[in-house]
Image (cartoon, rainbow, N blue to C red):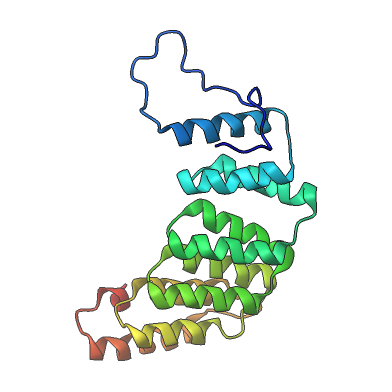
Length: 213
């Protein structure tokens, strides 16, 4: 890596055992970064250089669960600006929108430093790009429950359905809201209203499995 912050001995080489059957042909850059990463993990070094190292790891493998977990430990130890971290992870979400580790990191941040309005806006920007992105819908579900913001969610789902009658994700979200919204009933009358709504949508697209389900 050629970084003066790192001494030559500050690394732990990957141990593939005495007789590795089939070694992976990692690049030199990948090997160097991960040797350093094993060193900071083993020594529980939650420093600025370790935090910077996680960014290098993400560039090589953005789905590294351990690197994202370790980054959170660094952020806590350093008292880092979590608002700035929201911007950091937003960039990764746009670059890798179906990366579970990225969304788990966003959820961790949302619990500590964000608001429902900010997270809803972020989810909408992601859904505008891919209206069926499971991670976006799941994150919105989490935020609705965490911030206790149920009031306008049925209307939100219906707006997304209006955009695309065949968006099964939006239909599933509407059903989730109806079934889980606190202090509201979902008895025979409410079910009849929901059936009537689905039937109206089916009139516009009779073979729409999303509405039929």
